[in-house]
Figure 1 (cartoon, rainbow, N blue to C red):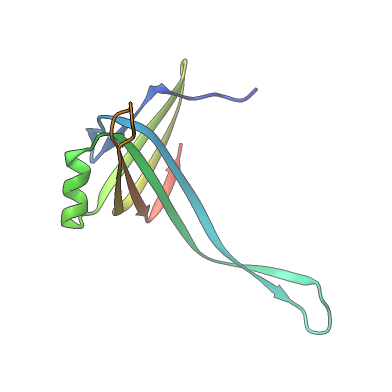
Figure 2: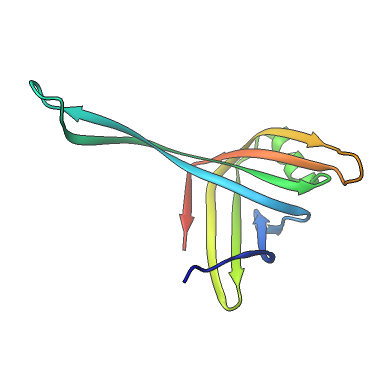
Length: 126
């Protein structure tokens, strides 16, 4: 059976400081992959793997001064997320992260939300 983590029970930190107002996090890993074909056939005989890219976004209620400061100073940071479901936890850590973009949205009858996009050197899931 699948483990369903909840945002209510989970938490995130930036440089070991709690990330207040976090609404959601999204991330993805993209592997550079190239097919190697044999001469005289249309079949693949091997696969070459290159660089892996890690990117994501943090959606925060209103804004976060810590993230604003990191974006302004182009400072590297570590991001750690602890996903929880009852007694089950899963730690996701991003090393060598940099913020790339900040987007603010305010809608009618709702609170403001800032989306911070980031890249990281690696992601570790434990």
